[in-house]
Length: 457
Image (cartoon, rainbow, N blue to C red; front, side, top):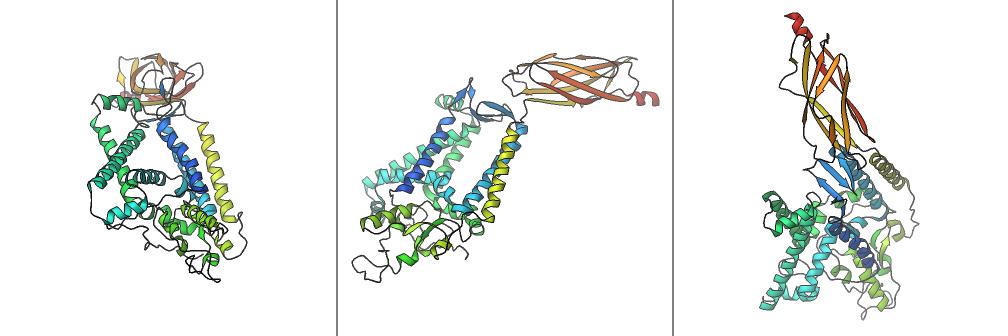
């Protein structure tokens, strides 16, 4: 398959500053895109408000050192599961790319979803694409300035709502809103929201397709992943060429009437009739626009359609092939491993470290004490209290909380003093036991006596 060219010469409905205005269209693929994107938007803006047992349903809490996923708490040591989930999702992305091109970009990518939202706000406030292009070529009037100001205001409000919601997955959203209403929002959170809102406004409102082409690596390595059987948005040149205006066309003219609608509806500003290009995000807007034209002209639809290079050349296209099967197998294995990992999460996290201030303390001729710092965190709803005990060589006693309430904030180090009598070795094994009705954990450490130092003296 030939290298995917980067064609950037087409600008539908151009303005004086070089930007282009995207014309909205309707059709089955645009309905499919909404069917996919609207639930994703509803989930993004809605799930952050859902609570379970008085706590957020989804929260990545730095303050509490825990991750709450669908009501279940995970420790930060389980972050590797999220990394595994990202790897599995990347495998799925590769699988989709080999099978159907950049359908993720066109139908589910946040950059595309928010870009379409901003375009619709632009269409609502300033009018259709042709009107916006004409206004850009004419002198600025008070009415146009008012409409343009309303557009930017709505863009800013949507960007702030997006940034606030995103922050709400790391800091409880109710706390953010309450502090914002009381004008008591911390500088850190305020700065983060402003930065995220600015990036959203810039990406979806001003930069748009340049992110897809220049910043997103997916547009670059897609050329390596495509093959002759990849189903992607394609123009059937054999059927459409030579192009001719409907009135001037003859018997040898192709079905393409050169109306230019496929270019005008493209959110990245390319002409699909030039062939596969790196900027194409397979949103299928050009398919819907062309199908609408073909229907009005009483011609068969599908002049632009999802098709492979093999199909366009008149050959048979194969869906099942080694590369696609390989990506599919890796994807299934990755998701299986991640799902298994979620069944093996940490429910009781115990950390023990020695007090660096003093390795041991000789109380008297028979007794030596060591000080340990212990941190216990619980991530199970079924276990609230754990009893603490120790075991090891010699006559042991310890001083510190003998029962820990996991419902309280125990993400701090609790000192424990352990003393041993008549222990003649330099060091011995010491075990802390944390036992509850459901969960039990034992943690080993070392008890030091300084016996060698005493002998040497």
